[in-house]
Length: 381
Image 1 (cartoon, helix red, strand yellow):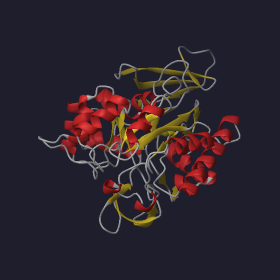
Image 2 (spheres, rainbow, N blue to C red; image 1 turned 180 degrees about the vertical axis):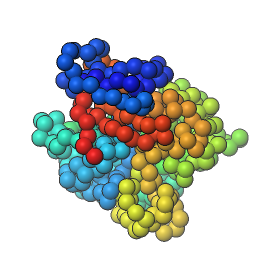
Image 3 (cartoon, rainbow, N blue to C red; image 1 turned 90 degrees about the vertical axis):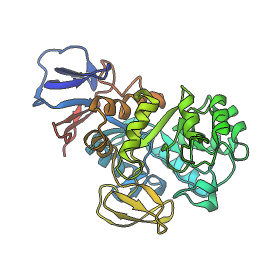
């Protein structure tokens, strides 16, 4: 296949007029002759987006522990231009966590065997958000199931998932957290999250092997000129990447712009943190067993606590560019290459590079999705 008349997003994060070649489900360096030709009509051609932190959409949640639910979520995400997904768990009782991991592992086995349906985003990992967090910064997490870091529990869950856990969230000030980092830092990405840690504690965690911060600014102390906390520690640790939710609710546009200045675009990862109401209408839903009330783009618990977002990653990217003055080239990199590198899948996705899976999105000038390709096959919308 040849897709012509497009602005191709290159590995140098620059758009260039050109063509894209696809052969046997992968990007190719050149045409192979007698190829189907598609006119891209001057669209932006970008890699499929990669969301490494979201909970649900279209009425389903990853924590429902249902293969059918994962499939429906994957279909919706794909239709929105998100072609790889790394959904997040919540702070739940241990039995539920085992069920979630086993279900995801089984789903992935079917996906790899080719038994899964086409037109779905690929399940590339799991983000284990909880239960190793601080009750003082639980946000929308359930306090009853918060527990100290446990290497045996993590490793059991990792085994049940088939090795899918790509990130584990911890509060570094809690019991056993530093020792947990020491033992598993080479097995997964350790992220600081839902924490009251001060600068020194967060800095120690990052020096010992943590390298990621979950939804920066949310569920952690604010940046203060005398007490910079997790945010300041993350800024000073050059190997640390940070998540940003650009849904227009979680973070003010001025702070989004300041974050890019502070960290540099190469260290920022756009996420959605979306919950099951995403893609549906206003109403009452649930997240982690708690009631959530959704109105417009805002999802909250009964007490007003923000409970995830109701915007998918493509919507967040669009808002970052159109409403927050982040350059399109920058935003695309933060939703494709950066997350792919962070969870170790950049060898097969995250850029339009010969040899990688042909996961591709065509956007019009208003950044609306015109076409999605997964493994070189166009989704039928």
